[in-house]
Length: 280
Ligand SMILES: Nc1ncnc2c1ncn2[C@@H]1O[C@H](COP(=O)(O)OP(=O)(O)O)[C@@H](O)[C@H]1O
Ligand SMILES: [Mg+2]
Image 1 (cartoon, helix red, strand yellow):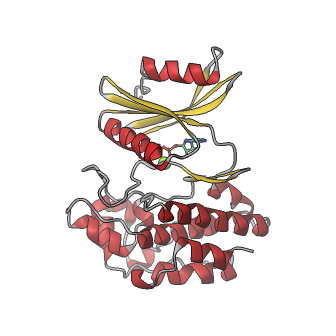
Image 2 (cartoon, protein in one colour):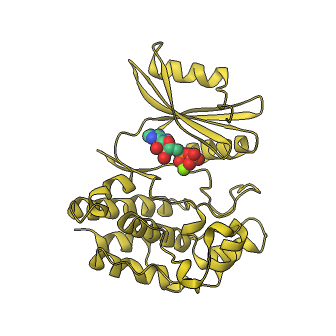
């Protein structure tokens, strides 16, 4: 059994200050060097993320990115005794994956799903307009609140000149564009993550939310992804020869996404253009 990640006293105090003395902490996730708790009390709810060991540097960089971006859900951060913590307002609402649940279950809820996909594109477009890339877009990293989509897990968010950290390996491997995979396997740092690579991951995210499967059909290319190391998988992705999955549960939507997953990065739409194509 793994040992639960400890919560630094300063982080606990900040969560208590934010939520109230009747603070209750409920673990949401604990993986890859960082853990997230939902903190609740009579004053409000927050997400508390604590990174220890190698995760400390990553969480500290996420906190710095949220502060630099002045996101409206930032509530505090600190570094203490080899760990780093980040407190954010609890964002109430479904993830993009959640919004697409009824679509995956058989086709209902398409109007809401399409609107959510367009909203996600707008949020990414806003980040790009500010000169940043997210670099780890995923079905769970857009939260659809009453006041719009908030992008979370900005641990790898980057702009030219921003310290990237040596551990960066492209975020979610299954949503890596071939050109980003090719850049990562060289081992050269920093890896210049482009808005086009984010748009690939954005299209891949919406594709995954629609089909319930990652976009690339490794089996069709004779690859067993479970038998590959992440580095080997990136090598396969970098060839650009792994086909996209064949299922078409929602052809009209997938027809818009497919060229983004196949095209030359120089011809990618922007996140805003993709959103306009999908939107009402
Ligand atoms: N501010 C927040 N509001 C609501 N849920 C959050 C918030 N921050 C994190 N979460 C939840 O915690 C999960 C893990 O957070 P994330 O930042 O993605 O950490 P990890 O590095 O473990 O992937 C998210 O998928 C989401 O469910
Ligand atoms: Mg995450």
